[in-house]
Length: 121
Image (spheres, rainbow, N blue to C red):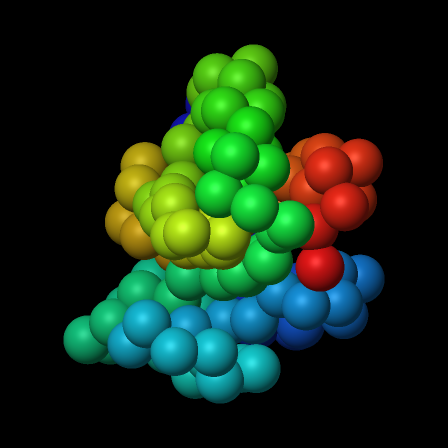
């Protein structure tokens, strides 16, 4: 069964439970997305985004490996970027036309928990 796109209110409610996460439509954190974009229409689809800073490149790489494991378990994958001591994610559901779904927020919660274990800030 395909994932159902969330309404703007559902997105806002779930986002409020994830401090540090933002919505983007252009690659920058805006804190909100338009109702049209959130519903999967319009020019740009929203993405749930977050960046973490780690103590070292090695620590950041370890977080990437653990995020990859979680993504495989959930069968839901993000755009994942490794910097020197940073890890950034952008999440949406391709099978829902790029809209945000419960899968995106489940992945965000799982990543948030494992990032905390690694001391990410």
